Length: 429
Image 1: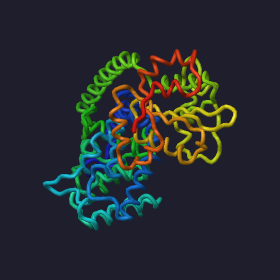
Image 2 (image 1 turned 90 degrees about the vertical axis):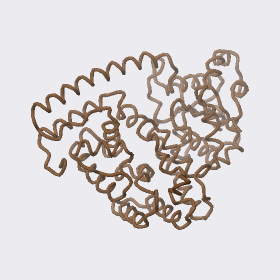
Image 3 (image 1 turned 30 degrees about the vertical axis):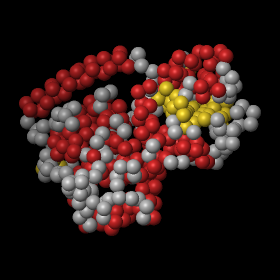
Image 4 (image 1 turned 120 degrees about the horizontal axis):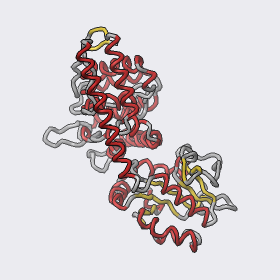
């Protein structure tokens, strides 16, 4: 590995390793709060589907000439919802009328070139094909369409394309002594090679998924941590380590304070547990999302007393729906619930759509988005997007936490069928 064009010393490498270890253990850093976040993995498939829709609309000539209300806005917004590392991911795609950029809304040829880039990366599985596709779009010199597109490509090839934003570039420059500039594909490709080298050197502390090192660089570039010194002077390194220890103590104190505050709030798992218990009490079989079944809940596991398998032939996304109620005798789907505690609303809607389209839904009585009271407007805004025009026929309902908490005891004791749940929820469209 090189830093600033010079071979990295052992002291440099050790200091960087120490910082990565600190980052991994920091509950407020992107490793704990985003990279290990289980919902992050759920979003890959829904974002891929959104990109496929963008490609199909461009190929058919029906994409339109505006960002607002487009399928591209839907998928980019779902990326931007994913916690701090992707905050602002939609800014480069917003139409700047005075500059007339990015020039993929008014220029049909540029729009098609953009679609070809996405389609190539959707279909390929090799590094060289991705790089060639990037070089091809770079040669088009489309105004305003730069490496921010890498955030879309990351969700297609997380082991080959790192995420990209200003903080990640700043973090990379601070750690390596480089001078990578924003907005140029050639600069991005050079940085990508450097990121791969860094990732290889510290593989045991990072991941094959380049989201890990992307998150690390983001936290450095956004000022959460100071980069290790570029030189190997013992006094300078000792001062840096002392500052790192101080920030570790401050971070631990802040995490403890947040924990005391959030202990008073409902958690995603708690809401799933409420819905599980209601379903069982109302006489239904209950399915808990496959990756949540072993979560600790009420001195047991969230999946206790629930189904261990769903009918065959369903998509993998359906198995990730937070809670599903099924008819105990016939096995038909009765209701499905996506708990949108702090997660991407877009991804939850896509999973419910997968069930409605591909499952045995002749007896289905409701699809529910369960969310904190203050997220209702966000839910309605997502469902108003053209990409979800089919949702209107499915009669998706909004179930706020407050109604669920206030009425669940009565429903457990006296409820029958789906009527109580429908009574405390609201039709969204």
